[in-house]
Image (cartoon, rainbow, N blue to C red; front, side, top):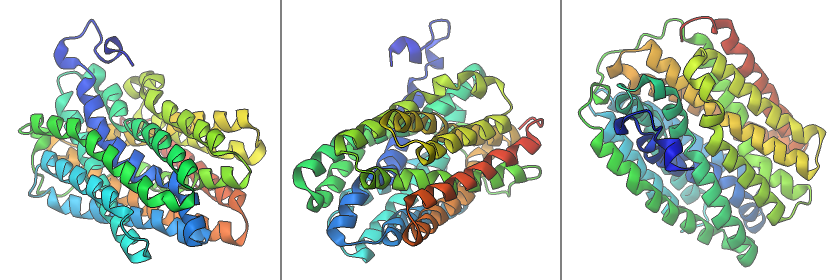
Length: 397
């Protein structure tokens, strides 16, 4: 990714996309490292600790419950706190939770740390959209791409986790999972520096104001329901795809290749979807992103060859963070500047509920059948998520 790509030559320096990239490293921490990297460590923890799929799914559900708690408390705290402060607090919680996760193997400790990281991720995820809106208010031509670039920061976390965790576990065996969590925590600290600096620069804008009044949600039922189902569906793939690859007999090298393909796709997705983010109705973009994740989830169900799995990872990765980008654009078009962070947080509450339901439900299905059945469950949810926004695609939001 070159400086020319992030700073278009015909636009002033103030319109650079580098601030969006820097803020996006918060998503690399909260989502790429704290949430999705669990899929890399799950097989080792499952083998070393003798877990069922339900128990394995529970830790991602615990992280999602933390996300619910973070979204709800964030919604309440934004009545008094500026989004930049809550964003920064979320980063601190996120890397603290990651650093501490591997210190003890008890379910109670692991659950508490996963919840802590989830709370932090919700605060950064929802408030970051408001900081992007503030930074690019005077550059509407870049708002869509900047929003996509912020959420696509998860791709950096996904890639870094794959490069750090898989070789480590290959060298140490399943018993090395505590060291894997420590490695993720160290990466999270490093990734947090730039977004913390960007958050300080973003204070004082109208979009960074506290919002004591309630939200007007009329006409937003379809995207709210779609986003909830999307959350419950996409997380099935992200939680269990590495376990699925292991059961299918793939080596850790092949699994790392699939994981890195997904990460690269996430990273380039805002540029692939640039025309959609800047020109389509956001509801239509949301539906298209859900459809991409549906296709990516369905491919392993019909073809288990390595090329097909790489395609699956790429297609899924291209869509997974365009969905929240579209939701952020819906919120920006539907609400006044001072309500953006609170509106995004409300969407995040329902998103978090979906994320909490998905892993444990899929784990139960996997225990009663197999992981193919769990992927089918995720695909059905994504199909519903694709259909819902189309009913309102002609509206401005």
